[in-house]
Structure formats: C-alpha cells, structure tokens
Length: 351
Image 1: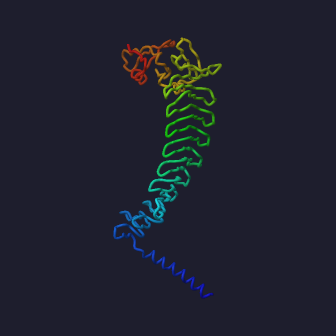
Image 2 (image 1 turned 120 degrees about the vertical axis):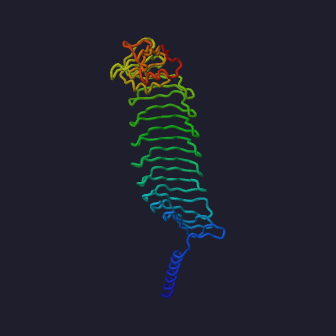
Image 3 (image 1 turned 90 degrees about the horizontal axis):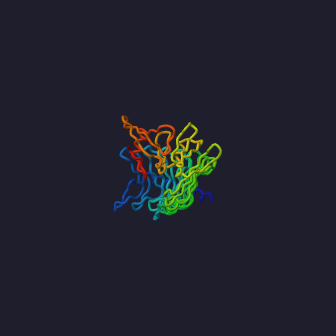
C-alpha cells in the first residue's frame, strides 16, 4: 500500500515537471502551413514592449488572452471559448485598476457592461442586446456611488421612463420616451424636492399646458403649446399684497425702478408695481414676446413705437414707447444693434 502511494505521488510530480518543461520550451509565434497562427504567441511593439500574449488555434484566439498598456500594466484580459462568438473581457486603467467588464458577441457588446473610474468606483452600467443598448443603463456619482441617471432602452432607442438625480439623491427630472422621442409627462424638481416645472411632450414637441414654479410653489410662468409652438403665455408676480397672474399680451413693458422694484406698464395705460428683478423676469419672458431696450427696460414688440437715431452718435437712439415713462428712454450699443436687426412681426420704425 505504501509503495502504491509513493508511485502515485511520483507520477503527479512527473506530470508537473513535464508541463513546466513544455511551457518553457514551447515555440512562440508559430503559424501552420496555411499561415494561420497557432500555439502560444507574444507580440512586442517596435520599442520591444509586450503588446499581447495568448494562444491561437487555427488562427483564432483561444482561452486567456492578455493585452498590455505601453507602461507594462495589463490593459485587458479576455477569455475566448472555442467555436463560440462570446468573449468575456475585463479592461484596466493604466494604474492597474479595473476600467470595465462585460462580454462581446461577434466583437460587439452584449449583455451587462460595468464601468469604473481609476479609483475603482462603479460609475456606469449598461445592458446590450447584440451591440444595441437594451434594458436599463445607469450613471453613478464618482464621488460616492449614488445614482445620478437612469435610462430605459429598446434596441438602441430610449423608450420608457428616464430619471436623473441631484448629488444628494433627490429627484431632478422624470420624463418618458417613446422610441427616442420625448413623449408623455415631464416633471422637473428643485433640489429641495419642490416641483420646478411640469408639462407634456408629444413626439418631441411640447403640448398643452406647461407651468414653471418658484421654490415656494408659486406659478412663475404658464404656457400653452400646440406642436411645440407657444399659443398663450401668462406670468406670475408678487405685488405688495398678493401674487398675481398676467397675460403677457396685456403687458407693454417692464422697467426697473429701484433695485427691488419693477414697474409693469400695461397696454390699457395702467401700471402695477411688483417686487422683482428685471433679469429674473427676462428669463421667463421669452424673445417671442419681449426684447431689452437697455439694461432697465424690457419691452414688448407692440410697445416699441419709434427709434430716433442720435444726430452725432451712431450707436445711440431715442426710443418712443407706448405709454412712455416719465423719463426719456435711450437705447445704445448692443441693445441698439439688436433692436435694428431683430426680425419681429411689428418691427419699430426708424425716423
């Protein structure tokens, strides 16, 4: 019995020695009579840096295959199955940390792929069906790994719910796609969780009622759309006593009276004093309706009655407005250029 054990041990050792000997004497970089690669290969760059190593059979890689970065670190390790279109691979950054991992089907991405930054943090996840994004893709914060974005795909097209998030994890945007077109409800939020704006898309075009809110939940702007074109717009303002909503078609112009007070001149000759800033107003009041005359006046096109060029300064003009304020209004420099060049339904006339 002891003799049998010793004989068995010697046999194992002999096999190991033969294997080691074979690997040391295996001829590198061979080809068969048809010129196809076979056996163990090592390829070096012109600078004698190892580029890759692995085995070939009938001209095709088999088993483990390793590519290297120019600095000698592993670039990727792939595993080739004989007579299979599937290759699993892991890629690495030049510092040696994992960069990505997944599988290929006939040299195109297939199944789940994961991506990492140079610190090893997971930053993205994708799912493929034979080269096309299919299923859920996710983007994560490189800082703490929190979810930043999630998209649903069908055969390479965005389809279904899309969401993205603030770095604190709060929802920023929630919307829907139908085969790569924005279609369905849209919601956007402030970082504190309050609703910022909402509306509906129909095949990439805004449709119906869209509302913008401030962080207190007040309606800043209400727009109505038909196939992406604004058909009506209302804006919200804070007076001394209440929050009011005005149809922009009733507004002649705004002017900043004091740092915290704006006067709204209405087309019926009345005025309203509001607590606001003209730059804030301009972000809501689109160029379809209003244009800056100078840094303190934002006018509707209808209220621009006449431009009177300055006699000696070609970069300045006097502006006559509908129901003008109790001071003369001038435009100059870039404001003047824009007023002269703008294309609008009722452009001002120059005297």
